[in-house]
Amino acid sequence: MSNVELWESGELGQSAEHARVAAGSKQEVDDALGLQLISIRLQKQLVNDLKKIAEINGVGYQPMIRDLLNRFARSEIRKIMLDRISQIEAEEESVVEASTAPVREFLQELKRA
Image (tube, rainbow, N blue to C red; front, side, top):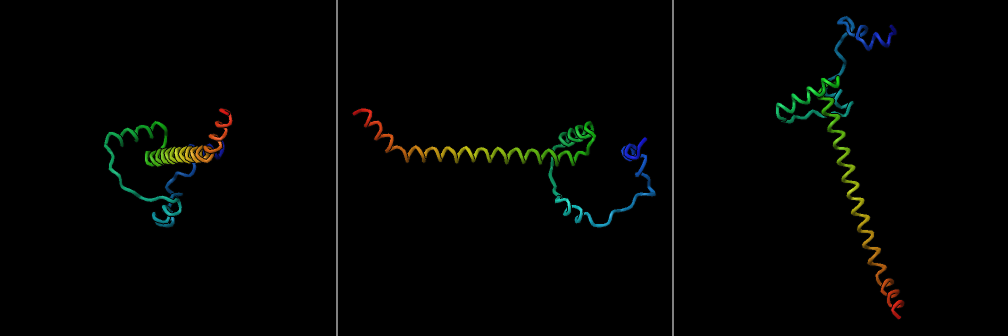
């Protein structure tokens, strides 16, 4: 078995003799990772469901929730930006149509004549 496999299986690196408290405060760790502690109230059943889902996927439920929120936020921001781009394009089209209206009317008059 390779060292990588031994580390992955936990045979290496998980003994109490090699464990020690990391230097720095929790705040320093949060700052370094760009994290902010928040408090939120969720239904107990929702928390239990999230914990079960996380367990099935082999991850912690808090990191999983963080990932879910990140994906949701990116998706919503993308949607908002696309909606705004559509609005801007529609506004530009109406400006172009309004500015070419005299030309269009002139051409229609020429066709009638």
